[in-house]
Amino acid sequence: MNSGTRRQTGFSLIKLLTVIAAILIILSLVAQPTSRRAKLYATEMVALKTITTIHTAQPRYFSQYGKFAGTLTELGPPASGEASASAADLLPASLAQTGESSGYRYILILTANGYTVNANPTMLGGTGSHTFFSDQTMRIHQHAGPEPATAADPELNQRE
Image 1 (cartoon, rainbow, N blue to C red):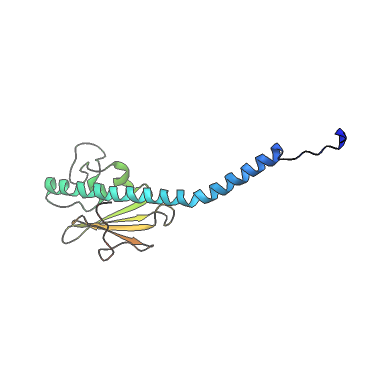
Image 2: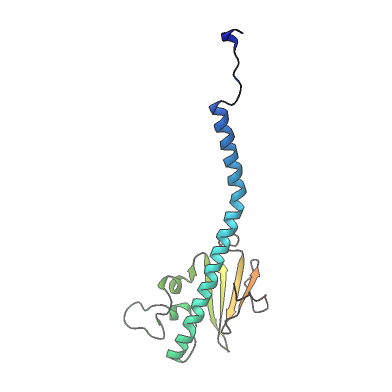
């Protein structure tokens, strides 16, 4: 056999790198939906914890001022001076001032029997896929979809 006509067999380095790059692209496409679901789940768990924080603040506010707070601002820190009924220093300033935290918007409303809390994603499907509702009973209900959750929606299992 003539050494000038010798053929090489196997993969060249370029072919090997191309195959590895293609495999990595495929793996990233497969992993992306899982990562997105995990992120949505995490923001929803933060929303549930924030509702729990509001529930913790309301009885403290009630014991100090004889009524439930009607706004998140009333549960937040004062701009200056001592805590009062208009700013009881029971919630972080970021939540009390904007009503938003970690991709959810929180709405606190006084009712004849107490209060209600709604948590709605700021971008449905982007920051959360469920809306949440709770009231002074501290039971949390969830709704899958753009409409705000209500007491008629299924109650979450509190062991989660």
